Image 1 (cartoon, rainbow, N blue to C red):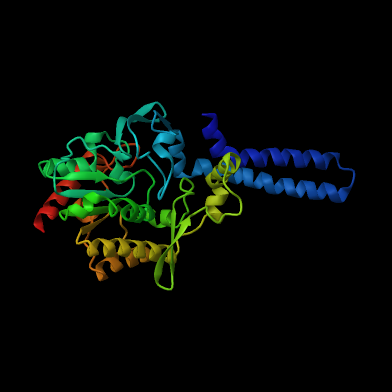
Image 2 (cartoon, rainbow, N blue to C red; image 1 turned 90 degrees about the horizontal axis):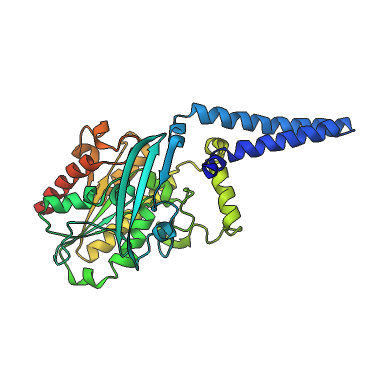
Length: 369
């Protein structure tokens, strides 16, 4: 509780203490000029303090501050510690089960268990002996935040396919397009399994938040793989923090969290989505499609929460069409997708019903080609 308060109210608390200190120095200063300097500086910090408090209670997102997370999934190094090629994620060399509980005030939103096998989400109806292999890439939508093992999208695909597939779920909370490409190149395409199996398909689940994640804008992903487009070529540049002047440690990480949670940061200093961020994701997806085509492996992109009226987003969708990359809009699959029936109430992630409908659609498409 104290940790959450510090992260959410760190900046207003710092500003409050600074303003009190400056007023104190102003009162005790014998020179009028110094008094004015101290008082004016204190006024700046008081203004920031008032802005932070006002924004916290005015912004609708403050509802999420009532959320309380518990269980062994959260703050667990085995689950989301530093990980090669992707920045963070579950350890590859171990299998385990963890609990995840979310409460809004005193109401339970979900109370579930996540099972991991060799660093990937476990799929209860997996057919490990099958020659038909599906690889899922994406974020919490694919991983199944707030859902048990038998409620995720990969589970429903195999349910409606009568356990036809051996499925690998590489999705994880907070991942983006950059992690999808890195996993594809450094894990999937290097496995003996994919060399021996021509009946494979890679399915990548995209949401618009991946534009910002692939650009390195997100606080939780300082070590994620960094890609840049230079001279129309996609170049791997190491990790996001590799060239940072100040190396991250316990103190700097906490200060960065406090700063990036502040409304003054979000309002003025936070990076805004740029055209180059959309181009980056377009090039990453095109690279995924290209390397899979060389291996004669089918590639499907699922487009969730899409806004065709957004000029930047639409540019990405047009690139998919232009490059003949197989893709489907979830809003066309589930026309009433905005209904609360398709999300976990009080959380917003896709629920069991959402995954059931989408799973049935994917099986139909997989069987049609």
